[in-house]
Length: 536
Image (cartoon, rainbow, N blue to C red):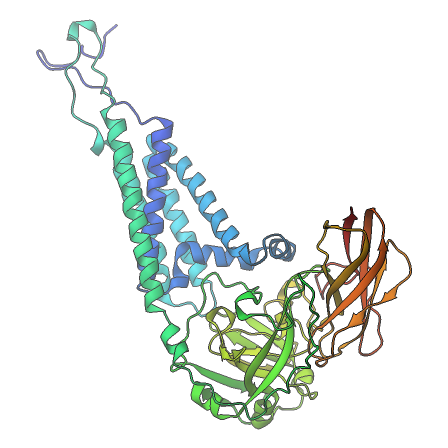
Protein backbone atom coordinates (compact mmCIF):
# COMPACT_ATOMS: atom_id res chain seq x y z
CA UNK A 1 0.00 0.00 0.00
CA UNK A 2 1.11 3.59 -0.58
CA UNK A 3 0.17 6.69 1.30
CA UNK A 4 -0.62 10.18 0.05
CA UNK A 5 3.06 11.21 -0.04
CA UNK A 6 4.43 8.18 -1.79
CA UNK A 7 4.25 9.80 -5.21
CA UNK A 8 5.56 13.21 -4.16
CA UNK A 9 8.99 14.31 -5.35
CA UNK A 10 11.77 13.91 -2.80
CA UNK A 11 11.85 16.76 -0.34
CA UNK A 12 8.41 18.16 -1.38
CA UNK A 13 5.80 19.05 1.19
CA UNK A 14 2.80 16.71 1.23
CA UNK A 15 -0.39 17.98 -0.48
CA UNK A 16 -2.77 19.78 1.85
CA UNK A 17 -6.24 18.37 2.32
CA UNK A 18 -8.85 21.07 1.74
CA UNK A 19 -11.57 21.09 4.36
CA UNK A 20 -14.99 21.69 2.78
CA UNK A 21 -17.19 24.33 4.32
CA UNK A 22 -19.49 23.00 7.01
CA UNK A 23 -23.24 22.93 6.37
CA UNK A 24 -23.95 26.05 8.43
CA UNK A 25 -21.25 28.08 6.70
CA UNK A 26 -22.30 26.74 3.30
CA UNK A 27 -25.91 27.72 3.98
CA UNK A 28 -24.74 31.20 4.96
CA UNK A 29 -22.90 31.46 1.65
CA UNK A 30 -26.14 30.57 -0.13
CA UNK A 31 -28.01 33.25 1.80
CA UNK A 32 -25.33 35.76 0.85
CA UNK A 33 -25.82 34.85 -2.81
CA UNK A 34 -29.57 35.36 -2.45
CA UNK A 35 -28.99 38.71 -0.76
CA UNK A 36 -26.77 39.72 -3.67
CA UNK A 37 -29.57 38.73 -6.04
CA UNK A 38 -32.13 40.86 -4.21
CA UNK A 39 -29.79 43.83 -3.94
CA UNK A 40 -28.75 43.71 -7.59
CA UNK A 41 -32.35 43.23 -8.71
CA UNK A 42 -33.62 46.18 -6.71
CA UNK A 43 -30.78 48.39 -7.92
CA UNK A 44 -31.45 47.48 -11.55
CA UNK A 45 -35.19 48.00 -11.09
CA UNK A 46 -34.48 51.57 -10.00
CA UNK A 47 -33.27 52.25 -13.54
CA UNK A 48 -35.99 50.31 -15.33
CA UNK A 49 -39.33 50.02 -13.48
CA UNK A 50 -40.07 49.13 -9.83
CA UNK A 51 -42.55 46.43 -10.90
CA UNK A 52 -39.73 44.68 -12.78
CA UNK A 53 -37.96 43.83 -9.52
CA UNK A 54 -37.70 40.00 -9.45
CA UNK A 55 -39.39 39.65 -6.07
CA UNK A 56 -42.24 41.97 -7.07
CA UNK A 57 -42.63 40.29 -10.47
CA UNK A 58 -42.76 36.81 -8.94
CA UNK A 59 -45.14 38.04 -6.24
CA UNK A 60 -47.45 39.55 -8.85
CA UNK A 61 -47.39 36.31 -10.83
CA UNK A 62 -48.21 34.39 -7.64
CA UNK A 63 -51.24 36.63 -7.08
CA UNK A 64 -52.44 36.06 -10.63
CA UNK A 65 -51.92 32.31 -10.54
CA UNK A 66 -53.30 31.70 -7.05
CA UNK A 67 -56.69 29.94 -6.97
CA UNK A 68 -59.65 32.17 -6.17
CA UNK A 69 -60.18 30.41 -2.84
CA UNK A 70 -56.61 31.24 -1.81
CA UNK A 71 -57.01 34.91 -2.77
CA UNK A 72 -60.27 35.19 -0.82
CA UNK A 73 -58.76 33.45 2.21
CA UNK A 74 -55.73 35.77 2.17
CA UNK A 75 -57.89 38.91 2.14
CA UNK A 76 -60.12 37.57 4.92
CA UNK A 77 -57.24 36.33 7.04
CA UNK A 78 -54.70 39.13 6.58
CA UNK A 79 -56.82 42.01 5.29
CA UNK A 80 -54.84 44.88 3.82
CA UNK A 81 -51.66 43.20 5.09
CA UNK A 82 -52.00 40.35 2.59
CA UNK A 83 -49.30 41.78 0.34
CA UNK A 84 -46.83 42.08 3.20
CA UNK A 85 -47.50 38.46 4.10
CA UNK A 86 -47.00 37.39 0.48
CA UNK A 87 -43.68 39.20 0.16
CA UNK A 88 -42.58 37.82 3.51
CA UNK A 89 -43.42 34.33 2.28
CA UNK A 90 -41.45 34.85 -0.93
CA UNK A 91 -38.40 36.03 1.00
CA UNK A 92 -38.70 33.08 3.38
CA UNK A 93 -38.92 30.52 0.58
CA UNK A 94 -36.07 32.24 -1.22
CA UNK A 95 -33.93 32.13 1.91
CA UNK A 96 -34.57 28.43 2.52
CA UNK A 97 -33.87 27.57 -1.11
CA UNK A 98 -30.70 29.68 -1.10
CA UNK A 99 -29.43 27.99 2.04
CA UNK A 100 -29.98 24.58 0.42
CA UNK A 101 -28.18 25.70 -2.73
CA UNK A 102 -25.28 26.92 -0.61
CA UNK A 103 -24.90 23.42 0.86
CA UNK A 104 -25.16 21.93 -2.64
CA UNK A 105 -22.45 24.29 -3.89
CA UNK A 106 -19.89 22.67 -1.56
CA UNK A 107 -19.88 19.57 -3.77
CA UNK A 108 -21.50 20.76 -7.00
CA UNK A 109 -20.85 24.41 -7.45
CA UNK A 110 -21.90 24.40 -11.10
CA UNK A 111 -25.27 22.80 -10.35
CA UNK A 112 -26.00 25.32 -7.61
CA UNK A 113 -25.06 28.20 -9.90
CA UNK A 114 -27.34 26.79 -12.60
CA UNK A 115 -30.26 26.68 -10.18
CA UNK A 116 -29.65 30.29 -9.13
CA UNK A 117 -29.68 31.18 -12.82
CA UNK A 118 -32.99 29.33 -13.18
CA UNK A 119 -34.48 31.44 -10.40
CA UNK A 120 -33.36 34.52 -12.32
CA UNK A 121 -35.07 33.11 -15.38
CA UNK A 122 -38.26 32.68 -13.36
CA UNK A 123 -38.13 36.34 -12.38
CA UNK A 124 -37.56 37.39 -15.99
CA UNK A 125 -40.52 35.28 -17.15
CA UNK A 126 -42.74 36.75 -14.43
CA UNK A 127 -41.73 40.32 -15.35
CA UNK A 128 -42.25 39.84 -19.09
CA UNK A 129 -45.58 38.06 -18.54
CA UNK A 130 -47.10 41.10 -16.84
CA UNK A 131 -49.55 43.27 -18.77
CA UNK A 132 -47.83 46.27 -20.33
CA UNK A 133 -44.41 44.60 -19.92
CA UNK A 134 -41.36 46.17 -21.58
CA UNK A 135 -38.30 44.31 -22.94
CA UNK A 136 -36.12 46.07 -20.38
CA UNK A 137 -38.14 44.45 -17.57
CA UNK A 138 -35.92 41.36 -17.81
CA UNK A 139 -32.80 43.33 -16.84
CA UNK A 140 -33.38 43.32 -13.04
CA UNK A 141 -33.77 39.53 -13.05
CA UNK A 142 -30.65 39.16 -15.20
CA UNK A 143 -28.73 41.36 -12.76
CA UNK A 144 -30.07 39.33 -9.84
CA UNK A 145 -28.99 36.03 -11.40
CA UNK A 146 -25.56 37.40 -12.28
CA UNK A 147 -25.00 38.77 -8.80
CA UNK A 148 -26.07 35.54 -7.13
CA UNK A 149 -23.87 33.32 -9.31
CA UNK A 150 -20.83 35.57 -8.92
CA UNK A 151 -21.12 35.65 -5.12
CA UNK A 152 -21.78 31.92 -4.88
CA UNK A 153 -18.82 31.09 -7.13
CA UNK A 154 -16.56 33.26 -4.98
CA UNK A 155 -17.74 32.15 -1.55
CA UNK A 156 -17.96 28.44 -2.35
CA UNK A 157 -14.72 28.33 -4.32
CA UNK A 158 -11.09 27.89 -3.29
CA UNK A 159 -10.28 31.60 -3.40
CA UNK A 160 -10.89 32.02 0.32
CA UNK A 161 -8.73 29.01 1.28
CA UNK A 162 -5.15 29.72 2.46
CA UNK A 163 -2.05 28.04 1.15
CA UNK A 164 -0.74 24.86 2.80
CA UNK A 165 0.31 25.29 6.39
CA UNK A 166 3.23 23.49 8.03
CA UNK A 167 2.16 20.05 9.15
CA UNK A 168 3.60 16.93 10.65
CA UNK A 169 6.57 15.15 9.17
CA UNK A 170 5.96 13.37 5.89
CA UNK A 171 6.99 10.22 7.65
CA UNK A 172 3.73 10.29 9.59
CA UNK A 173 2.00 9.37 6.38
CA UNK A 174 -0.66 12.09 6.39
CA UNK A 175 -0.91 15.54 4.86
CA UNK A 176 -1.55 18.65 6.89
CA UNK A 177 -5.21 19.65 7.39
CA UNK A 178 -6.03 23.27 6.62
CA UNK A 179 -6.81 25.24 9.75
CA UNK A 180 -10.20 26.71 10.56
CA UNK A 181 -9.23 29.93 8.77
CA UNK A 182 -11.29 29.30 5.61
CA UNK A 183 -14.46 28.86 7.63
CA UNK A 184 -13.94 32.14 9.40
CA UNK A 185 -13.04 33.93 6.18
CA UNK A 186 -16.16 32.62 4.45
CA UNK A 187 -18.34 33.74 7.34
CA UNK A 188 -16.83 37.22 7.29
CA UNK A 189 -17.08 37.47 3.52
CA UNK A 190 -20.69 36.26 3.54
CA UNK A 191 -21.60 38.75 6.25
CA UNK A 192 -19.96 41.59 4.35
CA UNK A 193 -21.79 40.53 1.19
CA UNK A 194 -25.14 40.49 2.96
CA UNK A 195 -24.53 43.95 4.41
CA UNK A 196 -23.42 45.35 1.06
CA UNK A 197 -26.41 43.77 -0.70
CA UNK A 198 -28.80 45.20 1.88
CA UNK A 199 -27.36 48.66 1.36
CA UNK A 200 -27.53 48.28 -2.43
CA UNK A 201 -31.12 47.05 -2.33
CA UNK A 202 -32.18 49.82 0.03
CA UNK A 203 -30.52 52.42 -2.18
CA UNK A 204 -32.28 50.97 -5.21
CA UNK A 205 -35.67 51.06 -3.49
CA UNK A 206 -35.12 54.65 -2.29
CA UNK A 207 -34.06 55.70 -5.79
CA UNK A 208 -37.15 54.00 -7.28
CA UNK A 209 -39.37 55.84 -4.81
CA UNK A 210 -37.75 59.18 -5.57
CA UNK A 211 -37.89 58.72 -9.31
CA UNK A 212 -41.55 57.76 -9.14
CA UNK A 213 -42.58 60.26 -6.48
CA UNK A 214 -45.72 62.15 -7.52
CA UNK A 215 -46.44 63.81 -4.18
CA UNK A 216 -45.47 67.24 -5.50
CA UNK A 217 -47.62 66.77 -8.61
CA UNK A 218 -50.53 65.63 -6.45
CA UNK A 219 -50.12 68.62 -4.13
CA UNK A 220 -50.12 70.93 -7.16
CA UNK A 221 -53.55 69.72 -8.36
CA UNK A 222 -56.11 72.51 -8.06
CA UNK A 223 -59.60 71.09 -7.95
CA UNK A 224 -62.29 73.34 -9.44
CA UNK A 225 -65.48 73.80 -7.44
CA UNK A 226 -68.13 71.25 -8.37
CA UNK A 227 -70.77 72.30 -10.86
CA UNK A 228 -73.08 69.86 -9.11
CA UNK A 229 -72.30 69.82 -5.38
CA UNK A 230 -73.66 67.10 -3.15
CA UNK A 231 -76.52 68.15 -0.87
CA UNK A 232 -75.62 68.62 2.81
CA UNK A 233 -75.86 65.46 4.86
CA UNK A 234 -78.75 65.33 7.36
CA UNK A 235 -77.68 66.40 10.84
CA UNK A 236 -78.78 63.09 12.38
CA UNK A 237 -77.09 60.94 9.75
CA UNK A 238 -74.70 59.37 12.24
CA UNK A 239 -75.50 57.58 15.48
CA UNK A 240 -73.44 58.87 18.42
CA UNK A 241 -72.45 55.58 19.99
CA UNK A 242 -68.89 54.94 21.21
CA UNK A 243 -67.27 52.28 19.04
CA UNK A 244 -69.47 52.95 16.00
CA UNK A 245 -67.49 54.01 12.90
CA UNK A 246 -67.99 57.61 11.76
CA UNK A 247 -70.54 58.07 8.99
CA UNK A 248 -67.90 59.55 6.66
CA UNK A 249 -64.81 57.35 6.64
CA UNK A 250 -61.56 59.31 7.07
CA UNK A 251 -59.41 58.88 3.96
CA UNK A 252 -56.58 57.42 6.02
CA UNK A 253 -58.94 54.69 7.29
CA UNK A 254 -60.55 53.86 3.96
CA UNK A 255 -60.00 50.21 3.12
CA UNK A 256 -57.69 49.13 0.32
CA UNK A 257 -58.03 45.74 -1.39
CA UNK A 258 -56.24 45.28 -4.73
CA UNK A 259 -53.53 43.18 -6.36
CA UNK A 260 -50.84 45.86 -6.72
CA UNK A 261 -47.55 45.03 -4.97
CA UNK A 262 -46.10 48.32 -6.17
CA UNK A 263 -48.37 51.33 -6.46
CA UNK A 264 -48.57 52.89 -9.93
CA UNK A 265 -47.30 56.45 -9.74
CA UNK A 266 -48.71 58.66 -12.46
CA UNK A 267 -47.92 62.32 -13.03
CA UNK A 268 -51.23 63.95 -13.99
CA UNK A 269 -49.40 66.16 -16.48
CA UNK A 270 -48.49 63.02 -18.45
CA UNK A 271 -51.77 61.18 -17.83
CA UNK A 272 -54.36 60.57 -20.51
CA UNK A 273 -57.54 58.52 -20.77
CA UNK A 274 -58.51 56.75 -23.96
CA UNK A 275 -62.18 55.86 -24.58
CA UNK A 276 -62.63 53.53 -27.54
CA UNK A 277 -64.28 50.35 -28.79
CA UNK A 278 -67.97 50.24 -29.68
CA UNK A 279 -68.36 54.00 -29.82
CA UNK A 280 -69.02 56.42 -32.68
CA UNK A 281 -66.48 58.99 -31.55
CA UNK A 282 -63.36 57.66 -29.75
CA UNK A 283 -61.94 60.12 -27.23
CA UNK A 284 -58.54 60.89 -25.76
CA UNK A 285 -58.52 63.36 -22.86
CA UNK A 286 -55.85 64.68 -20.54
CA UNK A 287 -56.15 65.55 -16.87
CA UNK A 288 -56.85 69.24 -17.49
CA UNK A 289 -59.49 68.20 -20.05
CA UNK A 290 -61.10 65.99 -17.42
CA UNK A 291 -61.27 68.80 -14.87
CA UNK A 292 -62.74 71.09 -17.51
CA UNK A 293 -65.64 68.72 -18.16
CA UNK A 294 -67.35 70.04 -15.05
CA UNK A 295 -67.13 68.07 -11.83
CA UNK A 296 -69.82 66.80 -9.51
CA UNK A 297 -69.83 65.43 -5.99
CA UNK A 298 -71.18 62.05 -4.98
CA UNK A 299 -71.59 60.69 -1.47
CA UNK A 300 -71.24 56.95 -1.82
CA UNK A 301 -70.52 53.81 0.23
CA UNK A 302 -68.06 51.51 -1.51
CA UNK A 303 -67.73 47.89 -0.39
CA UNK A 304 -65.58 44.90 -1.31
CA UNK A 305 -66.97 41.58 -2.48
CA UNK A 306 -64.33 39.80 -0.36
CA UNK A 307 -66.22 40.73 2.80
CA UNK A 308 -67.51 37.83 4.84
CA UNK A 309 -70.80 38.52 6.62
CA UNK A 310 -70.06 41.40 8.98
CA UNK A 311 -66.74 42.13 7.25
CA UNK A 312 -64.86 45.44 7.57
CA UNK A 313 -64.23 46.31 3.92
CA UNK A 314 -66.71 49.11 3.39
CA UNK A 315 -66.36 52.87 3.64
CA UNK A 316 -68.19 56.07 2.82
CA UNK A 317 -66.63 59.12 1.27
CA UNK A 318 -67.52 62.22 -0.73
CA UNK A 319 -66.18 61.65 -4.21
CA UNK A 320 -65.51 64.40 -6.76
CA UNK A 321 -65.25 63.71 -10.47
CA UNK A 322 -66.60 64.01 -13.99
CA UNK A 323 -69.75 62.21 -15.05
CA UNK A 324 -68.88 58.87 -16.66
CA UNK A 325 -72.34 58.41 -18.25
CA UNK A 326 -72.05 61.87 -19.83
CA UNK A 327 -68.68 60.96 -21.32
CA UNK A 328 -70.11 57.74 -22.74
CA UNK A 329 -72.99 59.63 -24.32
CA UNK A 330 -70.54 62.12 -25.78
CA UNK A 331 -68.63 59.25 -27.38
CA UNK A 332 -71.83 57.65 -28.66
CA UNK A 333 -72.21 54.06 -27.40
CA UNK A 334 -73.15 51.75 -30.26
CA UNK A 335 -75.92 49.19 -30.27
CA UNK A 336 -74.78 45.83 -28.95
CA UNK A 337 -72.35 47.23 -26.39
CA UNK A 338 -72.57 45.30 -23.12
CA UNK A 339 -69.68 46.22 -20.87
CA UNK A 340 -67.18 48.97 -20.24
CA UNK A 341 -63.75 47.54 -19.46
CA UNK A 342 -61.50 49.86 -17.49
CA UNK A 343 -57.75 49.22 -17.51
CA UNK A 344 -55.34 50.55 -14.93
CA UNK A 345 -51.75 51.51 -15.64
CA UNK A 346 -50.56 48.21 -14.14
CA UNK A 347 -52.80 46.18 -16.46
CA UNK A 348 -55.69 45.35 -14.11
CA UNK A 349 -59.00 45.14 -15.99
CA UNK A 350 -62.44 45.67 -14.47
CA UNK A 351 -65.69 45.29 -16.39
CA UNK A 352 -68.89 47.24 -15.68
CA UNK A 353 -72.21 46.52 -17.41
CA UNK A 354 -73.02 49.36 -19.84
CA UNK A 355 -76.70 49.04 -18.97
CA UNK A 356 -75.89 49.88 -15.36
CA UNK A 357 -73.86 52.93 -16.34
CA UNK A 358 -76.64 54.35 -18.49
CA UNK A 359 -79.64 53.66 -16.21
CA UNK A 360 -79.52 57.07 -14.55
CA UNK A 361 -77.14 56.49 -11.65
CA UNK A 362 -74.36 59.01 -11.05
CA UNK A 363 -71.15 57.16 -11.90
CA UNK A 364 -67.93 59.17 -11.80
CA UNK A 365 -64.45 59.44 -13.17
CA UNK A 366 -63.30 60.42 -9.69
CA UNK A 367 -60.30 62.66 -9.06
CA UNK A 368 -60.80 63.42 -5.35
CA UNK A 369 -62.18 62.02 -2.12
CA UNK A 370 -63.15 63.96 0.97
CA UNK A 371 -62.10 67.25 -0.61
CA UNK A 372 -58.54 66.25 -1.60
CA UNK A 373 -56.96 64.77 -4.70
CA UNK A 374 -57.05 60.99 -4.63
CA UNK A 375 -54.22 59.44 -2.61
CA UNK A 376 -51.89 57.30 -4.70
CA UNK A 377 -53.10 54.12 -2.97
CA UNK A 378 -56.68 54.94 -3.94
CA UNK A 379 -56.04 55.52 -7.63
CA UNK A 380 -54.46 58.95 -8.22
CA UNK A 381 -54.99 60.69 -10.56
CA UNK A 382 -58.27 59.07 -11.71
CA UNK A 383 -60.49 56.11 -10.86
CA UNK A 384 -64.04 54.99 -11.54
CA UNK A 385 -66.86 54.98 -9.00
CA UNK A 386 -70.21 53.31 -9.79
CA UNK A 387 -72.88 53.15 -7.05
CA UNK A 388 -74.60 49.82 -6.50
CA UNK A 389 -71.68 47.62 -7.55
CA UNK A 390 -68.86 46.00 -5.62
CA UNK A 391 -65.42 47.41 -6.30
CA UNK A 392 -64.36 44.47 -8.47
CA UNK A 393 -66.84 45.54 -11.19
CA UNK A 394 -66.81 49.29 -10.66
CA UNK A 395 -63.60 50.69 -9.18
CA UNK A 396 -60.72 50.80 -11.65
CA UNK A 397 -57.88 52.62 -9.92
CA UNK A 398 -55.02 54.33 -11.81
CA UNK A 399 -57.36 54.40 -14.81
CA UNK A 400 -55.80 54.95 -18.26
CA UNK A 401 -58.12 53.17 -20.70
CA UNK A 402 -61.85 52.53 -21.21
CA UNK A 403 -63.06 50.10 -23.84
CA UNK A 404 -66.73 49.67 -24.73
CA UNK A 405 -67.15 46.05 -25.76
CA UNK A 406 -69.27 42.91 -25.36
CA UNK A 407 -69.25 40.21 -22.70
CA UNK A 408 -68.20 37.62 -25.28
CA UNK A 409 -65.24 39.66 -26.49
CA UNK A 410 -63.52 40.25 -23.15
CA UNK A 411 -63.40 38.64 -19.74
CA UNK A 412 -61.97 41.12 -17.21
CA UNK A 413 -59.54 40.01 -14.50
CA UNK A 414 -62.02 38.87 -11.85
CA UNK A 415 -64.51 37.35 -14.27
CA UNK A 416 -61.73 35.10 -15.58
CA UNK A 417 -61.40 33.87 -12.02
CA UNK A 418 -65.03 32.86 -11.67
CA UNK A 419 -66.62 35.96 -10.13
CA UNK A 420 -70.06 37.15 -11.23
CA UNK A 421 -70.09 39.66 -14.09
CA UNK A 422 -72.57 42.11 -12.61
CA UNK A 423 -71.19 42.61 -9.09
CA UNK A 424 -74.43 43.98 -7.63
CA UNK A 425 -74.00 44.77 -3.94
CA UNK A 426 -75.96 42.48 -1.65
CA UNK A 427 -77.84 43.79 1.37
CA UNK A 428 -75.59 43.78 4.43
CA UNK A 429 -76.06 44.63 8.09
CA UNK A 430 -73.28 44.61 10.65
CA UNK A 431 -73.23 44.78 14.44
CA UNK A 432 -70.39 47.11 15.42
CA UNK A 433 -71.30 47.57 19.10
CA UNK A 434 -70.83 45.56 21.26
CA UNK A 435 -67.78 43.90 19.77
CA UNK A 436 -67.63 40.10 19.45
CA UNK A 437 -67.02 38.38 22.80
CA UNK A 438 -67.40 41.66 24.64
CA UNK A 439 -68.39 41.73 28.31
CA UNK A 440 -71.32 44.02 29.03
CA UNK A 441 -73.13 44.94 32.24
CA UNK A 442 -76.63 43.61 32.93
CA UNK A 443 -79.69 45.75 32.31
CA UNK A 444 -80.09 47.93 29.25
CA UNK A 445 -77.40 47.39 26.61
CA UNK A 446 -76.94 49.55 23.48
CA UNK A 447 -76.56 47.58 20.26
CA UNK A 448 -75.51 49.58 17.20
CA UNK A 449 -74.25 49.02 13.72
CA UNK A 450 -74.28 49.85 10.04
CA UNK A 451 -76.29 48.53 7.10
CA UNK A 452 -76.01 49.10 3.36
CA UNK A 453 -77.63 48.07 0.09
CA UNK A 454 -76.15 50.65 -2.23
CA UNK A 455 -78.40 52.08 -4.91
CA UNK A 456 -81.41 50.44 -3.22
CA UNK A 457 -81.09 51.95 0.24
CA UNK A 458 -81.99 50.61 3.68
CA UNK A 459 -85.62 50.72 4.85
CA UNK A 460 -85.34 48.82 8.14
CA UNK A 461 -82.97 46.97 10.47
CA UNK A 462 -84.07 44.40 13.04
CA UNK A 463 -82.24 42.85 15.98
CA UNK A 464 -82.93 39.72 18.00
CA UNK A 465 -81.38 38.05 21.02
CA UNK A 466 -80.85 34.29 21.38
CA UNK A 467 -83.14 33.48 18.48
CA UNK A 468 -86.09 35.35 19.99
CA UNK A 469 -88.49 37.72 18.26
CA UNK A 470 -87.13 40.39 15.94
CA UNK A 471 -87.19 43.96 17.27
CA UNK A 472 -87.06 47.08 15.12
CA UNK A 473 -83.86 49.07 15.45
CA UNK A 474 -83.91 52.87 15.35
CA UNK A 475 -82.46 54.14 12.08
CA UNK A 476 -80.34 57.27 11.77
CA UNK A 477 -81.38 59.82 9.16
CA UNK A 478 -81.43 58.58 5.58
CA UNK A 479 -78.78 60.30 3.43
CA UNK A 480 -79.76 58.51 0.24
CA UNK A 481 -79.82 55.06 -1.36
CA UNK A 482 -76.13 55.12 -2.30
CA UNK A 483 -74.95 55.38 1.32
CA UNK A 484 -74.94 53.14 4.33
CA UNK A 485 -77.27 53.75 7.22
CA UNK A 486 -76.44 53.57 10.89
CA UNK A 487 -78.80 52.14 13.49
CA UNK A 488 -79.19 51.60 17.22
CA UNK A 489 -81.24 49.31 19.44
CA UNK A 490 -81.65 49.10 23.21
CA UNK A 491 -81.51 45.56 24.49
CA UNK A 492 -83.54 45.76 27.66
CA UNK A 493 -83.16 43.47 30.65
CA UNK A 494 -79.93 41.80 29.61
CA UNK A 495 -79.45 38.95 32.09
CA UNK A 496 -76.12 37.47 33.18
CA UNK A 497 -74.79 34.77 30.89
CA UNK A 498 -73.68 34.29 27.29
CA UNK A 499 -75.99 35.61 24.59
CA UNK A 500 -76.10 35.73 20.80
CA UNK A 501 -77.15 38.94 19.03
CA UNK A 502 -78.23 38.94 15.36
CA UNK A 503 -79.15 41.68 12.89
CA UNK A 504 -80.86 41.74 9.52
CA UNK A 505 -81.79 44.54 7.14
CA UNK A 506 -84.54 45.26 4.63
CA UNK A 507 -83.55 47.16 1.51
CA UNK A 508 -85.46 49.95 -0.19
CA UNK A 509 -87.32 47.51 -2.45
CA UNK A 510 -88.76 45.67 0.57
CA UNK A 511 -86.51 42.61 0.21
CA UNK A 512 -85.35 41.18 3.55
CA UNK A 513 -81.73 40.16 3.88
CA UNK A 514 -81.59 36.34 3.48
CA UNK A 515 -80.61 34.17 6.41
CA UNK A 516 -78.71 31.55 4.40
CA UNK A 517 -74.96 31.90 4.75
CA UNK A 518 -73.02 31.88 1.49
CA UNK A 519 -69.32 32.70 0.96
CA UNK A 520 -68.11 35.78 -0.91
CA UNK A 521 -67.33 33.86 -4.10
CA UNK A 522 -68.79 34.20 -6.69
CA UNK A 523 -71.19 37.10 -6.07
CA UNK A 524 -70.88 38.31 -2.47
CA UNK A 525 -71.59 36.83 0.95
CA UNK A 526 -75.10 36.52 2.36
CA UNK A 527 -76.45 35.76 5.82
CA UNK A 528 -77.19 37.49 9.11
CA UNK A 529 -74.33 38.90 11.13
CA UNK A 530 -74.17 37.79 14.74
CA UNK A 531 -71.97 38.41 17.76
CA UNK A 532 -71.68 36.55 21.04
CA UNK A 533 -71.40 38.61 24.22
CA UNK A 534 -71.23 37.87 27.90
CA UNK A 535 -73.33 39.76 30.42
CA UNK A 536 -71.50 39.95 33.74
